[in-house]
Image 1: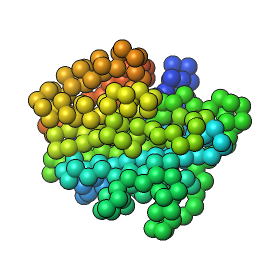
Image 2 (image 1 turned 180 degrees about the vertical axis):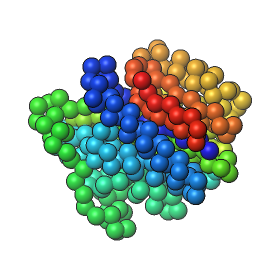
Image 3 (image 1 turned 180 degrees about the horizontal axis):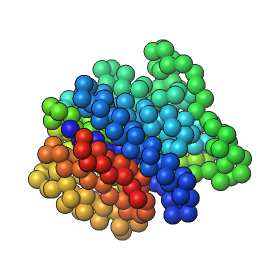
Length: 280
């Protein structure tokens, strides 16, 4: 069993040691807790569990603490993919829901698996997801001061369970001040993709990630025989001509865990029951 999670980018890590340590501790705690959860649950259930915890932590830009868009509202996106069944489900620009990833999970067995805007929010309400404001004072202050966001905040998880099944989940609170209706990469196969060979979750600038089709390219290349390292190297090299801003985490079916970012520094943590790694 292996698990790796990410919490977006953290450019302040070199100057704000207190926040850096808080993120390191939170990511390791969630990674280890989710690993324990996976001992009695599937990879699919585990990635939802892990991302829900990330959404509940205001240190990260997803769920609680999401960015505010240009019209003063918060709209979030999340998706989930089961590498075994090849089912992907997601919500785009959902509003006033505490855990978008849990709504995405409910869509796994729906005929219509990706919902956006009012449709996504209405679907959540019909299933009993209560109205919940994910705004925190910090985000409102940033918004009022026109300082919100750098477009690099997303959370995600990739898990390999004891049955060799892979799943991936990704959730974002947006980049801040975006035009209402803007679509992030998090609920697309560019930002969140898995099959029986590999799973990948992305963070960074959504437009760059979509332009590079990053997650789907990495998974496809691993499926075609590339090593995880080789697949990352080739795909990230293809971002260079347009200075694409992205960070990715991945696990393949052999249990290899990999992460890479094009610009410093993605925050992440991984755990396999014995060994742990966290961003520095």
